[in-house]
Amino acid sequence: MEWDLAVALSFDSVVPKSAIKVPLSQAINYVLAQDLTADIALPPAHTSMMDGYAVFGPGPWRIVGELHAGDSLPYLETGCALKVSTGAHLPPHCSFVIPQEMATLFDGDVASKNSFTQGQHIRQPGDEALAGESIAATGSLFTPAIAGLAASSGIDEVSVFEPPTVSVIVTGSELTSAGTPGPGQIRDSLSVQVTHWAKYLGANVNSSINCADDLVELKEAINSSSGDIVIVTGGSSFGERDYLRPALEQLGAIYLVSEIWMRPGHPSLLAKLPDGKLVAGLPGNPLAALVSFMTVVAPALRGLSGQSEYRMAKVPLAKDFACDRTRIVPIVLSSGLAEMTEFRGSAMLRGLSHADALGVISPGDNPSGTLIRVMPLPWRVN
Image 1 (tube, rainbow, N blue to C red):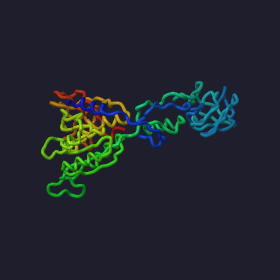
Image 2 (tube, rainbow, N blue to C red; image 1 turned 30 degrees about the vertical axis):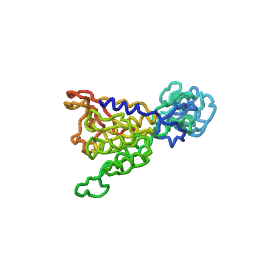
Image 3 (cartoon, rainbow, N blue to C red; image 1 turned 30 degrees about the horizontal axis):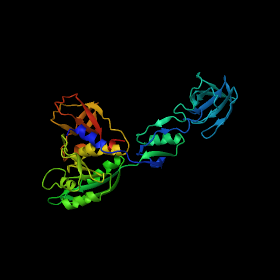
Image 4 (cartoon, rainbow, N blue to C red; image 1 turned 135 degrees about the vertical axis):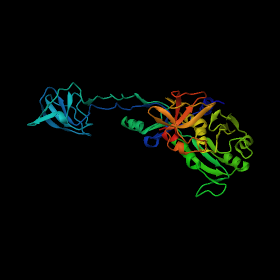
């Protein structure tokens, strides 16, 4: 099937998980399950925007005291001034604040070197948000900035979608996990990557195991995995020693995606087991595995966590590139153009290691200047 259809089917194959209430500090990187509304106005009072002197009425002004963050004073007499710090809550009728550097002091009075308008250098109550106003929408990723906004708004806990869980199975009898590979062996470069791809996208990884190229062992590993999505790397193609598809057939799985008209990673698959678990089959080559992950796993993770489908930005290609199917390549963004990295074979990581994103190039001639879609790398999404 076409790449866009595979992405859509992955997203549509799931529904958001249950909502849970958690403290702000625990909600970072979760997704809001309901709109976040301010409990109080932001700011809650008239607030000085800088160090200086808050005054009332015509000047010059007699300095009658000081106000700093944490202090408050309900009233200021006309013709008087208060020395104030940034963030101090001011009497609501103050005329303006004279910045420290614009103030002239003499005999206990203060005068201004400039004229100021009513309310200048004073934040008004609610100028950022009114009490009861929505400050973050359902489906928004709960970022540190939103957490700070929520705390400022008087909120202590939020309703978020429970994060999805992922189990990882890395297959390959030729893989070794430490040291220099011996004859016929290669280092396992996927175990160290796949779990973190999922974590970067907000999932909890509950297991990561290696599995030999053995049908019985693979079937048992899949059957005993407890994640919402079981990610299997390697063995997704149709060779005699590719055991993922036979294992899925014996487990009674239904294919949602069987093959994708793309390079790299065309034998990627997504299937659903009778118990509702998804199984994503990624190729064993590392770049192809990432492309497959972003195609059939990332959209499902967004759906499970309550996010909307991802909308990709577009940038022009730096050079001509013709292809007969969707090509997904590591790119560097330079001067507003997408430059393909030099090392972009399906088994290569060098080009990916310094890429800014993945470029999604549609089939066709694609002369330089053609707009292509830009898909963020998992470690650059947030």
